[in-house]
Length: 364
Image 1: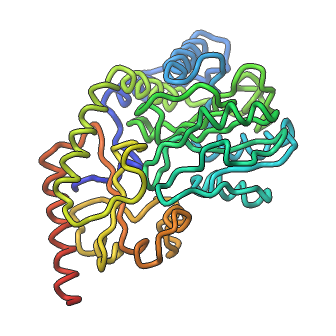
Image 2: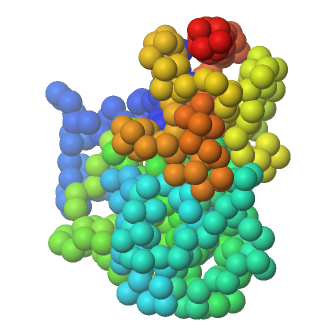
């Protein structure tokens, strides 16, 4: 398989797998101990969790606490559903948030901030932000890769007594996380860590109500037995991302330049300048993305968010950017990163281009 769907998930880094193995509790191991237990094996598991917590926190702003969750969906739901008890002035968010945030926002009657054809929210001085509520703004859009002005919106939100929630899933470990947010949601499996583990970072001084009650784990914020194996894998993936940040960014930039050269005749959706370049969302007039997926089985790519790809609807992100139904149907998302080779990218884009050319010939 030629894998070009890094926004959906990433492969598990060998270093992350190695970090997990001692805590899976196989035969002859005591790594299965509950980290809340007070005997030696439990204390060792708890220590491993705290080491990983520090590794995850190292890629986030100073002055906050990492609370592990089952993933970013849980973290976003927690921040929005429980955060309104802390900030009852209402909720607002961009129209292109991930469904994990967007469906919460819509269910709460939120004000949606529009985006322009470039996939960016307006300058903050052009937006009437609410007072004493929560503003949700993702850092890197999962469908088109645009990078939003999170720091500017955080300053404006604070000036109005509001909190800023940032979905940093697609940016964490790939670009710097800006100062300013009060709540940050992240996920391990987008940075070559395991699935089933994410976190909500809460700024010091923000007294967010607990998500789950019970045993008082995660400093009383999220009860339930913590998985040392998943947490250790997350920590190792975060450490590796920190160590490889410059090398990974340079590699992604080379792949981006190559892809633009090979995709002659395609139009990039969203800002080219204000963008994470491991996400390339493109369209070609007359091409049908769904048919490309069927015709190019050797390549893993997508039409947009993996969470919404089975709905049969065109992307809410592309619609919010003003694309027509035909343009949205002609769009595909290509994601690449650390383990994508130049040869793989060249082969994959060649197959996609050939299939698109065939579609256009038959349609003529």
